[in-house]
Length: 136
Image 1 (cartoon, rainbow, N blue to C red):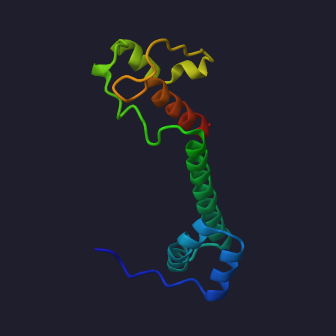
Image 2: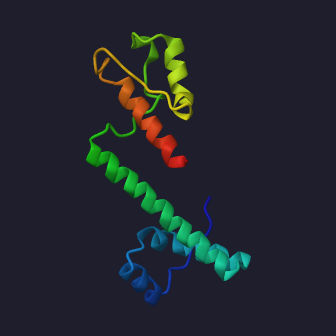
């Protein structure tokens, strides 16, 4: 069961958010403002939460855009990798999956077929590395 819907943002504020192109802030504003009102947040806290929502949304959109432009397979992770179908030893796969080799600035060299059963370990590994680097 969900609570009552958050009241809409005043039209003039909605217009300003559209004009400033703040789609993620605009989407989060009704819920955040209702919570802020109910919990008597400091105005600076309200701004911080709304701006953080906008930044998070823009970062996610940027990642999607860059991933799409690069032509990487979207959503590939080690969860979709089938280790039993690979010719790479399980120990090696486990070591690569930890991504510890990145912190040690070691290179990864892969030789052999580019795709094993439609899923490339290199692509999966690269996407994991990209995700890790975005967290740093």
